[in-house]
Image 1 (cartoon, rainbow, N blue to C red):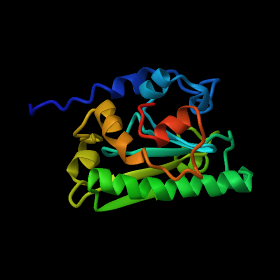
Image 2 (cartoon, one colour):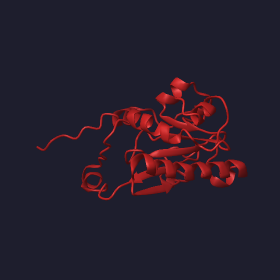
Image 3 (cartoon, rainbow, N blue to C red):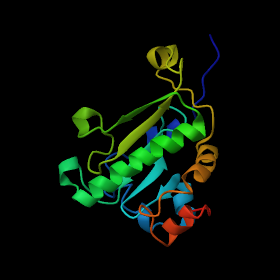
Image 4 (cartoon, one colour):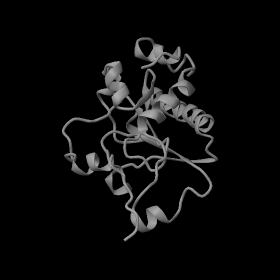
Length: 183
């Protein structure tokens, strides 16, 4: 038999209760710096935040999440919609610089039928891509190779998000991120 492939972080997802009563995104803006670090938050702005996907498709897989708990784009207030997509644009620029990716998938899964794992709280996925990163592993073994620990990726990305435009960032934890201080 061949060599085993290990993805030990996946067991947390497999064993975790599904259909949680509490939204995993809603508490993040009020979370302590320590909790934000543990939850892989990279940057927080007045109306949205950036975090790493705990179960990524590729290294650096980001989620851009509005603070507003809504399930669809049309439910977002115009200011929240604008802020969300400004942060998506900023995040693609910073991710490209940080990870030297040559392409990206940017998308939103609206509803469980579309593949949304957390359908009740809208979020945008940004998945960095490199030539040749899609290979036989996901097709034959349903395995993705992520070459860096999530915490190390988060620490690496912090500096690239430290200078978000002041118009996106407010004070408190958000202001510290804008000044390059750890969250």
